[in-house]
Structure formats: structure tokens, C-alpha cells
Image (tube, rainbow, N blue to C red; front, side, top):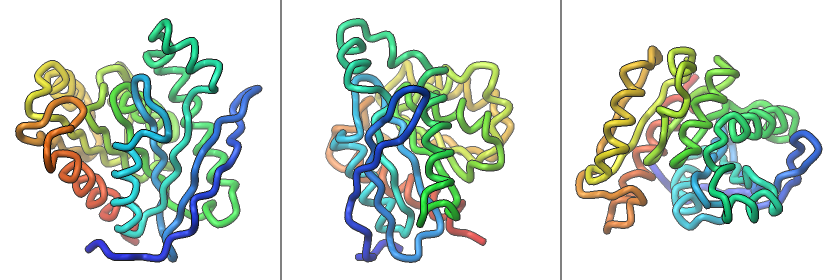
Length: 223
């Protein structure tokens, strides 16, 4: 299923959003038919080792990736002090929608089916953006996410959605169960046994990566 597919070198882009630009890294396997945009979570960035690892596995399945910063450097500095912007789901979702529209205009990527991979609060932002863009989004995966933060928009998500939660992440399991019950789209919830919120246990992140890659391969690469 996974192989050593040739992938374009990582290239850094400036993605416009409002009056700002966000830095992003785009990589595409040869003959990719889909691309996954990453929405990182609390206090994270596009350089997160966890998201970088998952992105490599997704590319090995033949799906491109765009990892980008949801906040500007100035906003990140504020968020480190206040921890408020990471919970501004409306702002994060808008940034994700803007990045999606940028991808759809970018040479070499404009034809690709689009998926979202969200972590922590980024999981909520991914579902809000998917609810807004409807059929434009082909699949969503949430890792240790906060889908509950999508609130009343959950029933409006049409993209097949996979919620992955650590088996020892008890509060987040309950949040995901409640959100799952409100969703009407095709969906699954997977609990990774023995894993905590960050999936730092041996083999846990590998399990997440393969679950995500399989989901995107199924829904983004199919005709």
C-alpha cells in the first residue's frame, strides 16, 4: 500500500489570508490525485515533528500535503502568552478556508481533491471549514481533536470524517463521542489503545499515521 513514491522537494510558499501571509510547505508525490491540508493545534506549528511524521506517511500513500502556520509569528507570540488564539476556531477555520482557496489556484495542485488533517483545536477548525466548503472537501481526519468546538456546524459537514483519539485521553474521548453523535456525514471513530493525548507512546503515532493515510487514500484517490 505504501511505497517509495517520488515526491517533489518541499517548497515554501506565502499563503495570503486577509492582510497577512502564512508560510506553508507543499509537497506532492508524482501522479498525486489528492492533497491534505494540515490544521495544527494548541501551541504547534507546521514544523511539528508529529505532523511532519504523519505527512510523510500520507505522501507514501500517494497523497500530497500542505503544512502551514495558522498564525503569523506576531500572533504566535501573543498566543504563547494568552493561549487565546488557539481556541479562536472561527479565525483558524477562516485561515484554513483561505489556504484551500489558494491551493485551488496553485499550478500543479488546483486539480487535486482536498482533505483536512486537524490536531487538537485544529480538528475543530477543520470541521468548521469543511462545513463551509461542503463538497469541495473530500475527507477529514481529526487526531486527538476537539470536534466539539465546531458546535452547531457539525451536522453540516458532508466530508467523510475520521475521529482518532487516544485510549487514555478520557475527556477528549467523551468530547469526540458527543460530536460524533451530532454528525450526519459518513464517519468513523477510532480509539488507539494505550495512547495519551499526544500519542507519544511507542507505536501510537504510527497507528495514527496509517489510519489517516488509509482514510485519505480511500476518499481522495478513488474515482
